[in-house]
Length: 156
Image (cartoon, rainbow, N blue to C red; front, side):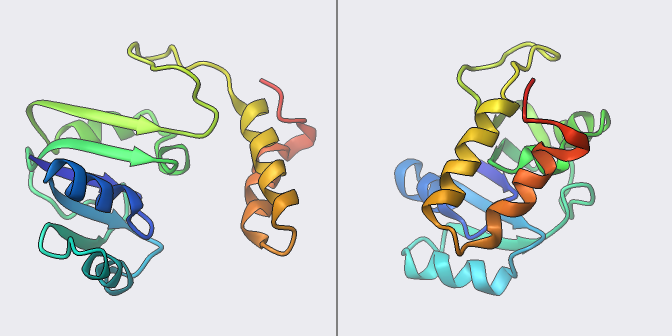
């Protein structure tokens, strides 16, 4: 099985898929250098099964029908907001391929387009809890700002 881990970051999901399922994984991320991610994969003992690629989600350097599955864990909400995103990604799937996305505050599986449950309030609550646990870590500020933009309180 060949899997695209889209928005892979430092590659935790890629390592998991390679170790637990023996998948051949392409870890694509725009913000983490391919060399940095490749070092993580080598240290985890999966460097032979995981390829690190620096790529934007809207400009992927792959041939059509290159993957059996595309996964995105905790990143789809950043690049997948345009109506054109899913049709674009589907072209990289082989016939019968699967898309799998997990985002913050998802509490149930979603199978129908347009049936995404509300979850912004839970996402904000979780992010604020993480920020309180690590007050010196600035990583949570942009997310809190996004969720409370325009006077919002994180409600749905």
